[in-house]
Amino acid sequence: MFSLSLYYLHNMDDYRDEYKPKDSTWNQNEFVSLDSEGNIIGFISYGIHRVDRRAEGLHVVNFTLKSNPTFSKDLAQVIDDIFCKFNLRLLTYCAIVDNPACKIWDKFTEHYGGRIVGDYKKVHRLIDNRFYDKRVYQLMREDYIKHRPKIFEKQRKAVTINE
Image 1: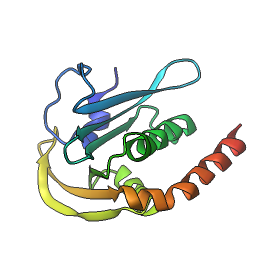
Image 2: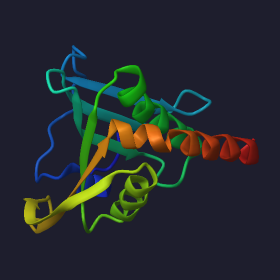
Image 3: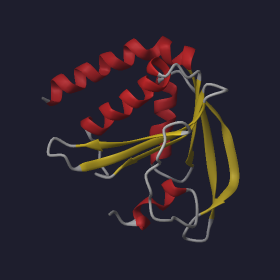
Image 4: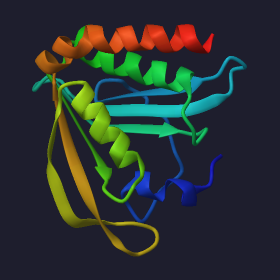
C-alpha cells in the first residue's frame, strides 16, 4: 500500500477508511492501471448518475508519482469510454487548488474543451487539519467529441516516441 501522507491533497478529507472495491458498476466505475509486469501503477474511478447521464467525482491517482505513458493512456481510455462507450453527456471533477496536480487538471480541461466552473474557498479540511480551496471542472460530451481527434493524435505520437 502507499503512504497516505503522499496523497492527502487527493483525498479531500481528513479521514480515509480501508479501500473496499465496489460490488456493482451501476453507480461507480473503478479501474487500476497496470505496467507491463502487472504491477498496479494507478487507480481511476468515477461516480455515475444514469438518469442524468453524467459522471462525477473523477478520482485519478498515479502511484508512480511521475509522468507515465501507460497510466496516461489508461486515463485517456477511461475518459473516452465515459463519452463514447457509455454515452454520458457530462463529466465533473475537482482538485484541491494547492495540489500541484491542479495545474495539470487546468491544462487537461482546456485541452479537452472543458471549463473551470470555479473555486470553493476553504471547503475541505485535510489530515494536516488545515482547510483548503477546491477547484471544480466540467467537461461536456460535445466539447470532448470536438477535441477527441486532436487528443488521440497526440497519444499516437507519444507512443511512437517512447517505444
